[in-house]
Image 1 (spheres, one colour):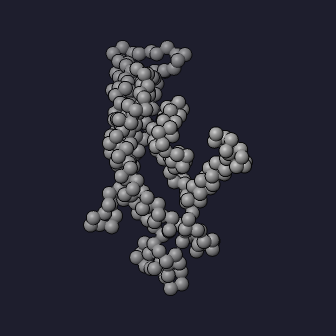
Image 2 (cartoon, helix red, strand yellow):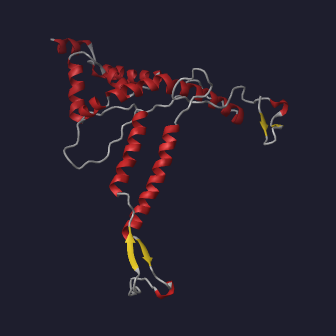
Length: 266
């Protein structure tokens, strides 16, 4: 069913008979953790809260820079404020017994920055993401060392992909396909797919060449394995097309007649 409820708790019809035109619930909830008792389980509240806190911290950091640069001037013990004029081209006159000073923010800029970094890092690590800030000290870490550091996060990300995001994408596609069909009359094929880049730690060009040459020379891989490695989400049609190209290349490399084949063999 499909209808609206206003602020007075009165039902207002949208479609005739309050029928849902899609036939399915056009809303899909994504859960960070699988629901056990309730229908909805909290998703990214920690990310939203962190984003709000970082926004506030950046505003305070900007104010700290501004007031730290010019300061807040304080004048006490003056009987008549009209007698005091302040400006870059003026001489400040202070009556007897008056005190003048400049205050600055008590918070250190470095402390605010480090606290903001910690807040972001803790939130991202709770979501299997590690943030790396630029450090001018030392050499850049290699891909292998980064892979070792990210073993736990990588395994968790793979598990989340299979447990949460692949089922979500399939359900989301079915809902979107139904909405498009109702709104536009276009029926999408069930074979419609999108190829996303797989997250991986890249090898250098020479390392990749040596790796695949070693596998080819030891009969541990062929051209199709190399294709699957670079296109893990390719549909069967693309794999068949690539296989046809391989077969055609092999046919072109064969001798043109039997006599030439025998001479080549000898």
